Image 1 (cartoon, rainbow, N blue to C red):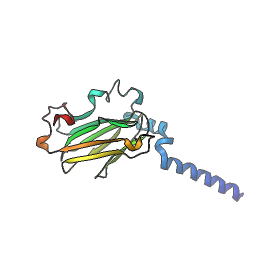
Image 2 (spheres, rainbow, N blue to C red):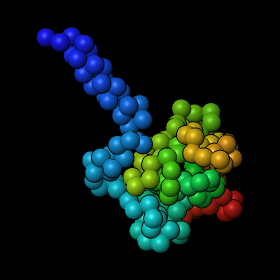
Image 3 (cartoon, protein in one colour):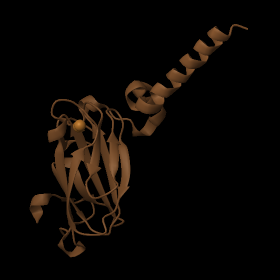
Image 4 (cartoon, protein in one colour):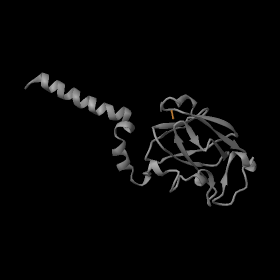
Length: 174
Ligand code: CUA
């Protein structure tokens, strides 16, 4: 048995395993897209057709009373820039990227949602208290990364705009 060869082989396998384990979303993006099946989305046509067209973004009231928020992350902004949600109600976030890997990190909370091009990231958020939660991009995405900011406005339930199911709330309705 050639121990040197074996050692090199083991090391190589180890390194190959470690790369995807730490940066899987960059290296294995095509594989991840394949595995994610139903959560795939074409990053090139986000604004043109499908779930993430302009007038479908933001906060929407569902018929069961829950709230869904759709956003796009792109270099170097979040669309929409300001999101209004009611306190104490589960918020179902659906977000995708138009270009690079980003993440939506909400200050003052543990929420940090990785956002990948080609995949819809989902998260369940709930805010116990009203207030303004600044968000920032938590994943280095290029020259404008540090300016990539937005905000979640959490309002008391009685100040949340009266909406019919399917209606949308924006920050300027306040
Ligand atoms: Cu987007 Cu950093």
